[in-house]
Image 1 (cartoon, rainbow, N blue to C red):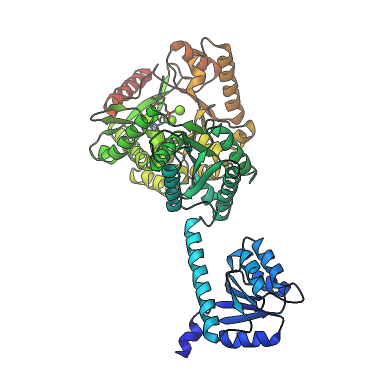
Image 2: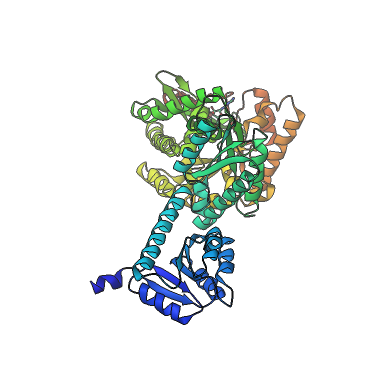
Length: 567
Ligand code: C2E
Ligand code: MG
Ligand code: MG
């Protein structure tokens, strides 16, 4: 019994009185059940409260003391958000002061001369119990980090507002952080928490100006239910502005979706739609803001369907890898140099679904790794199979999405792919889109450098669509620039585009990397590019992406041509 009492963590009580006799009496009453500490004036009491903030259960406070009396202590405590959490029982002989003490936040009072032991113990016990209960509720109600409401309380309050204040037209806003898991992974949880707190602080500041409530859910999602109907983009910019100040090194991008008030739509449905709007701008750093529309809902339903159907798609062989050739145009005639593997989805009901429709969707929810590794395996198997059949090794480029670059197993997976198919590292080239480099430069550069050390060639895809500075480019570990299609499209008719292409070719020359031009559809485009020094060309002019059996025609043609050339 004694042992268990020692092990059990006792509640801590602070007794404050200037008269030693009173301290003695209260000590005797309490020490059997509590750990007791003492203070003999108001200042000491405040110091002790601050020191024991986390484990102090209650304070018994004398009102009349020569150095800082109890009333003054109560005033200090009331003004301090943290101290206010500790319940205080006042000790007084002056009945008139009781009311004032209660008004200042005291939880109860004990009259002097002291009541019986039992009364004092009962009062202390009851107040501690009440206060612990209240703190539990308050903890469940508020998110520890941001002090915004937790999910359940938020939805409960939102539905009450909706039910009882129909005259208020409340909008639903969802705010999210792009790639929050990578921000955490790269900069540590502490930094991640700082970002969340910063957003929480700014939301609370905004809600002190407009009528509304807010919550943090699912780590980095914020719901705001408010009556404003003004320019929400300005609110996003305001919060983004605060977040930008957190670090010069880390880029943090927020996005926002809004469902404006609509008669008869309850908060749960409102937030579903606001979230849909927010998801629509995922990854769109240039336009991270969207207002919900009906068309979006259709799109969301389609997306949902595609996601649901994806696993069956692979098992039922609806997913196929097509190959588009890249020709070396500095040879005459141009020579088949390599190919790009591009995924195709032949959906039984929706027909051919373009990768542009499902790849960004999969990137958003982490499923892209599933498709990418399928494509990589197919491509590696195909290189090996064609080598076997034709005695000819045609390197194939595969696309890496930005989430692949954060997968810790990436290197091992690619290594085993090469080993299993008995390939050289040069047989599989890796295309990484330019924007993946610029979003999280340091980490991406590190992963890419390691891939290159293994022997992989890296092609920077869609070059010119992102924002690489020349400075960054010169430090980037790349072997090939793939010029974005938009430069090629109007090269024949538009002098500015022609100058841009020349500029890109010059940059590549300076960096000593090769250039692939994508989207080449006409002979005129091809000639301009070749004459400008472009090495490789990919596009409909030579061939559309083809299923492997049709692509083999190109290989056979190439082999035949080389044989003829040899003769
Ligand atoms: P990308 O990697 O830049 O691929 C080039 C895209 O341009 C392909 O579109 C190709 O069909 C198209 N294209 C090629 N030549 C021409 C042309 O002359 N004119 C025009 N208008 N288009 C041309 P696709 O196959 O629809 O793929 C779109 C994007 O989807 C790809 O852009 C790539 O970013 C992504 N993607 C495709 N397959 C995969 C994959 O297996 N994994 C990942 N992560 N992304 C993929
Ligand atoms: Mg590509
Ligand atoms: Mg491209």
